[in-house]
Length: 175
Image 1: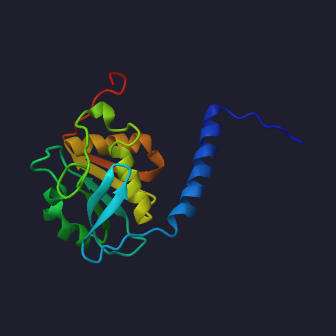
Image 2: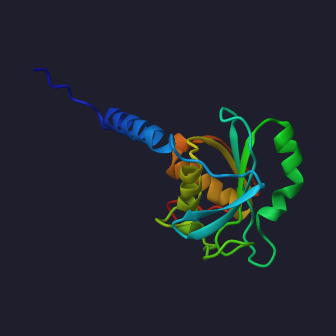
Image 3: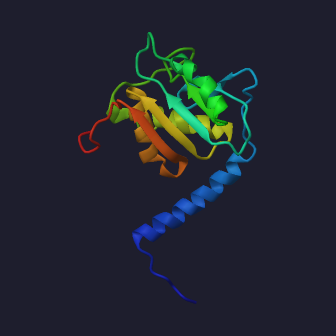
């Protein structure tokens, strides 16, 4: 037999490929009915209200995350974009993060908690898993931009592209 020595980078790529393969299989049977334009999706932080559309399965998926303001921030902030997103032939998933809009639970406004286990990045991952979505174009405004950035760092294989508007972020070494 032949034993091959791998660098840590090669090992990480191999592990990522194995996880990617497992993810493909796990997502095959998953979907959420967005025929009414919205759904409540179970996540690690409770039931989250998500705006979504019905589009071809091969269409790219865009996730938009709102700013942090329990009184005024929710997926409703993105409603003016829905027509343009549909016209662009993309699928969209726009959650009201926990503690906002119609979603139960709580979200922390602290950037150092975005990527903690059970935090906002895991909520987004859970939504994608429930919807059977592997990769997304993800973005957000203010707090949502910070969460989107943290998601792209924590789950790089699931972020096709990242865009942010006035992101609320902190240097990871300060956190």
